Image (cartoon, rainbow, N blue to C red; front, side, top):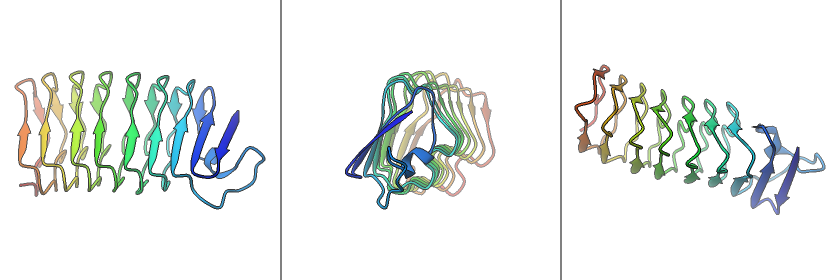
Length: 195
């Protein structure tokens, strides 16, 4: 395992298997960092971001590698400064609450291999205005977009079969939502306290 730190502004992490948050707290000599990086670039070869890997982080952007297959549960939980994340086309799974309470996140494009937006994935992303969902999507989990207060529109792709309870609750600005005929199961209160 090797880590390279660049003046605390950018961090490049190289690993062949699993990324853990401890790698952000020390440099290559094991010295504790006093500042948090502005951006994180995860190098090629990483296939999984572990559960809780970047929770409570303060960096502003993260670029994930083309080799990435999954993002763990709560991986970016309450990373309040995160306003940009590149999700590669290789990505197949985003864990529950992965981006929960990422207050600064404004837009995101979900790659085509994703079949499910898990429970609470974007819960409390208050500045999320734009999200592009893939045609491969079959399920939107409970509370997936709960409290995304700036989200104005949403096109649920054809092929989605299930929308979980409170998926769009407390989305105060939500005006336009297209729900396709492919939806077979609608949870309770999916638009509770939304306009």
